[in-house]
Length: 88
Image (cartoon, rainbow, N blue to C red):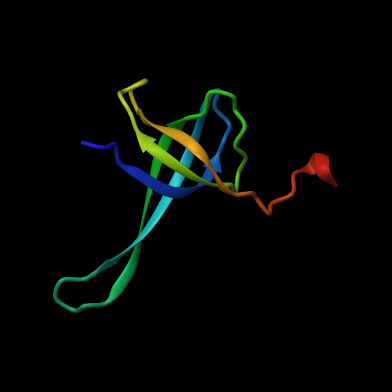
């Protein structure tokens, strides 16, 4: 069975070799049929610490690497538009 893959946005890179990726999906209420956003955050392994806040990335399910880390970043889809203080 293939590993699950999700697309999300990096919202934190303060940890060493770990980024927090937020995945947003749209659900529909079973009775009222209204659509609403559901957000979930995944801790993902980033070996080289190359992904920055705001980058859109693909993550893949993997074996448990630590207590809360079961995902790994595969690659970048879109670069961040957020400027850091060093770039000013």
